[in-house]
Image (cartoon, rainbow, N blue to C red):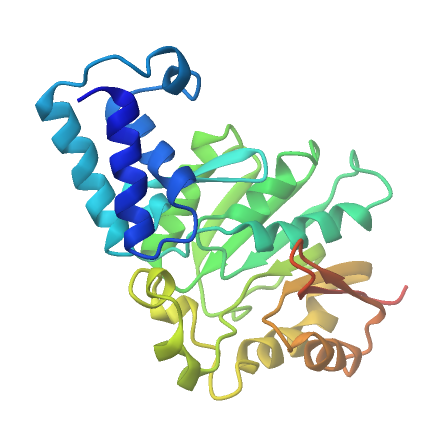
Amino acid sequence: MNLRTLRAQAEARLREAGVDTPDLDARYLLEHALTLTRTDFVTKAEQLIPDADAARALALVERRAGREPVGRILGHREFWTIDLALNSDTLEPRPDTETVVEAVFAAIPDRKANLKLIDFGTGTGCILLALLSELPNATGLGVDLSPLAVEAAAGNAERNGLADRARFQTGDWAKGIGDRFDIVVSNPPYIPSADIAALEPEVREHDPRRALDGGPDGLEPYRILAAELPRLLVPGGLAAFEVGQGQAEDVAALVEAQGLGETAILCDLGGVKRCVRARKGL
């Protein structure tokens, strides 16, 4: 078959499987399997695809039809302006999380300042590395309970030319952290335990449960982190947390109870209240 027919077949299979973006996902998978560029779908539409190559591409399409995320199939995912490798102990970074990055940048008066950052539950390192990519004099520490996640994050720092300013370590939130920081960020687990079974299969079956489960009400990690902010932040320091739908006001109350102010709640592109940002007093 030619490329046009193969793409149409891939899109039809994903549409039949109920995938939200069958055309986009089919393109990504065919690009990967056949080493194509986006323009090849126009300029090479009539080119015949060898049977073995078509079979390899359609095998990836079948994995997506089984609701395995595209990023898991490809082994990496773009986030902000960087590219991140995934493994079994990392969440797949999502565009919603870029709200945290934007929130921090909006509150930094001087991007060339010598800032110290810490990212709790760092996973792939997506938030920390995105921030460091545009803060040339900043350094950062990423902490995660999973050694495999720490391994992925360290590899991603190397992959994006940031290894000289980012380090990663295993840890249980802020236990054993004695330093103070200009910026504290986190995308912690925030799904209430009882809600995990009803999540989309892409999340429920492929993201690590430990990175999803926020306890009975989804707020347990925020209680832990908020209590640590007074000692972790320098005077005037900034905290920014990703939050789940309907959690923003509760998380804002938790950080304000620890004496932080200038609280802001920021929405993602879908209009969901996705980030709580606050500042420690001078």
